[in-house]
Image (cartoon, rainbow, N blue to C red; front, side):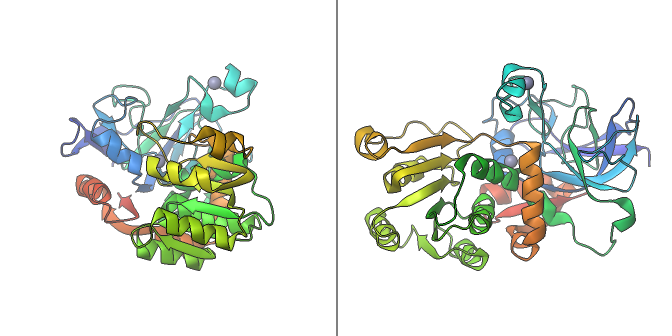
Length: 369
Ligand SMILES: [Zn+2]
Ligand SMILES: [Zn+2]
């Protein structure tokens, strides 16, 4: 086969078109990937509908890819110094940063790089490296891409199910970045708003950090049940309880303190208005779920922030460090995290898969080329 194909957005909100590309030959440290699976992120739906200002048409979506090295040049090494070889199963950093600007070099926050671009977001199919999203049979990764080999070629098991690794690429990465910034300590009361893929990772990370109470607020019963299996100590369904009832229950459980670390992983401004007042004195409120402009929130600043010495932390994406942390959390909790992928759909049916995500009929869909 000397052609690759991708599902291309030609018009926002319309059917993705299958388009063929000449198979790229990697040069100078580029890596060609044969995509094994691509997760669909909630933000893909926003891009598809034209709600993300970073996108340029025509484009290929997909920043949650895993795949096998198909061809490589220039002795490209992964983050451990392993020289990549065809057949290695790899994940990669969806963002490529310049590693020379102020935020990269001085602040050491590569995801805040002003020159950062992302696979599956920033580039059109007319921009190098052309096959730059994972809704495709193959991708070409530029030499600056951080790559991690998760299964070396001689250990790849043809019968193993590697697809759920895609949950680590974005959901797990962003959650790990939120936890890195939150600094959850043993004994902390942790509250998680939103039991989606980020929320499930958050329950597992809170448990591993030694949190005492792990309370999850959400609106979907089966997701809340999965949170309980993952280690949540209490789940509160916001469809069957009022905000006041939840606050009362949380204060009862935490001995009147509230949450030492509260994670907004729901994308909703209502969650912020509910969550900040539930933050304990000297606690932190960490918001990692809001990825589009949802407008203003109203908070009594004196009562709920200043007077309580509350720290507010925004989180935007994450870095290769966080991707690697998420991969390790996935490997320790495969039984739980594999269930985040609730549907698998052939790549050719990507439009249908986006509609399923838009209607919230799946926690996460994986596209299989
Ligand atoms: Zn994403
Ligand atoms: Zn930079």
